[in-house]
Length: 328
Image (cartoon, rainbow, N blue to C red; front, side, top):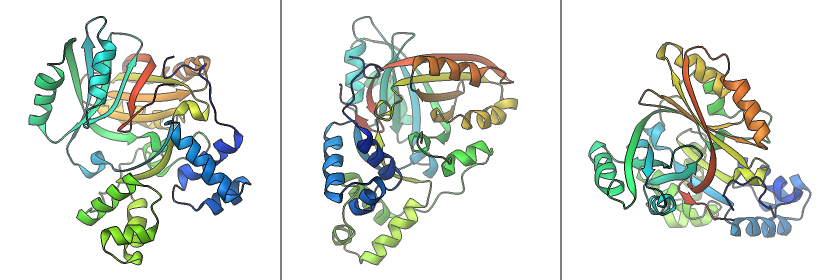
């Protein structure tokens, strides 16, 4: 079954979704607090969360955002494959540590991947020798991410208010200067990536710092746009199994206006500006293909300065947010 097949079964019920919705925005909240909010005993909340995590469709994410820290390069690749080699190439790219996301979609026979590299030299090596040398790869198109506006953290179908970053994008504002991050902050992030709910006492012990110091550092990071800590659920879990990808060719004189309008669309869960003639890339999630069609008609009609629109339905996602996506 395709990873994004809207007919795929789900083992998540109403209480599960209530837990996900609460902990997605409060990933370190106590089970007692979550239970009080959703009307369950704290042990029931813990047991249900553990079951959901075991499915692989729900997971905690803790990471610094390289784009906001101006660290390294993020590049979008379209890897054209020979017939019969698409799956092989997608899996080979997905196992790489520098691959953030890997998927295939309707349209050309290509693997779509978002990669993170240190510099231009590493990018050339990745394209020309590493991925370019994989069996079955015929051609590679690359586009550098110039500006990150929205990520999956900003896609909140259950929330009534937009996130901080979405609000900035809606208002046409750039993020504030990045928060300085030192080696201790990075070690703290690594520990949270290992266990996002690691008790404060354990974090302090591992960092050889006082609990109050660790708590202050964590609160500082969580208040900043350079760090993401959240409970992530695959869109299908939240009732939006239809995922789309779009690329726009936008005249630069109209770019900011177009980006503001796109940011107002709650279905959009990822939005970046890239190099190349097709300079806007985005992803959206929907309950049905009819909703996707309505989104396309509503969103892309009447956008001044848009010279071309390309849309595709994601057929399978192999990796998302740096983690493999388990096939259903």
